[in-house]
Length: 75
Image (cartoon, rainbow, N blue to C red):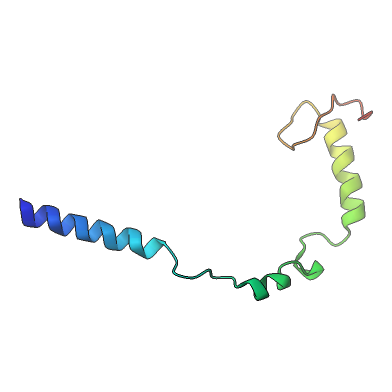
């Protein structure tokens, strides 16, 4: 019973130890590449903000977008 418990403890320790990175995968000097506008999902952020506002105004009762409004478009 004791060797089995020791084996399970070591196995769990190795599995959990493999989940923690020793160093970060993205180095600080590599993070500037993620802030590049080419990495954005939208092509025109100004029009997307407008369309999001219209969508949130019409679907105000639906929620879950992080903004407030009653659906009238006045917010």
